Length: 250
Ligand SMILES: [Zn+2]
Image 1 (cartoon, rainbow, N blue to C red):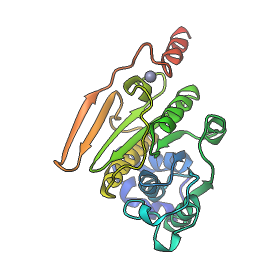
Image 2: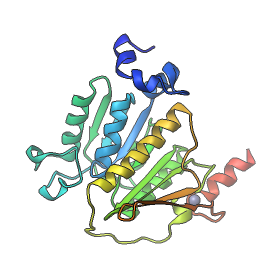
Image 3: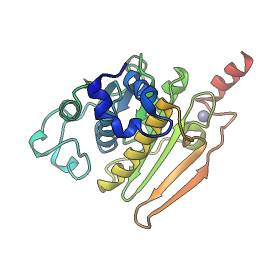
Image 4: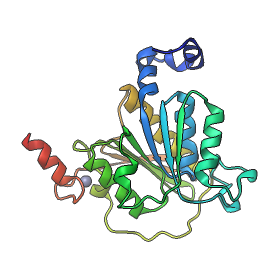
């Protein structure tokens, strides 16, 4: 049941056809895992907290640096030197007291990832490197948790939604391990892509609209173009092929 305060706070989104009080209750019950508290990880949890997602867990192992502040908008001048998760969670709690926000200061590794996502309904990719994304993709498929991919570079970004066992996964479309060091980004790019990820998360939880599945969305901010590429499930994909086969047998 929603409280009177919640009915007022979320009034405008409850008005949306297909959301209603029932959709708002689904958001309240949802538990979303955010991998990273950087550029994308500043934007996605902000909009999910504003929308009333019940539990948000943010995981990151970095501290705030001056050079982060052009794009990681949850971190401010006064936060330099603080743990990113602490800085992020403090702001999210101030935005919406009704939402439970958890900070975990850990580096996501093959060893801890399964435990970190345990009990969560959705995983948001707010990482900055491909090996970490592969880890998230793999655990999402193994544990049957929907996975919301996002990535940025300069004025460009991309996004895709992955439903384990049903749609193409990240590994179906990306191959190899690109070693990424420091790369250029302007803050508006994670702003756009993080909002697309948050939109997908909200749609998935409420159960409305058409998801960004089997489609890789490419955003080109310099020319202001959105392009889509069809993503096909790879029957030999090392992450999702086994899962699909296993599910077919049932
Ligand atoms: Zn795959």
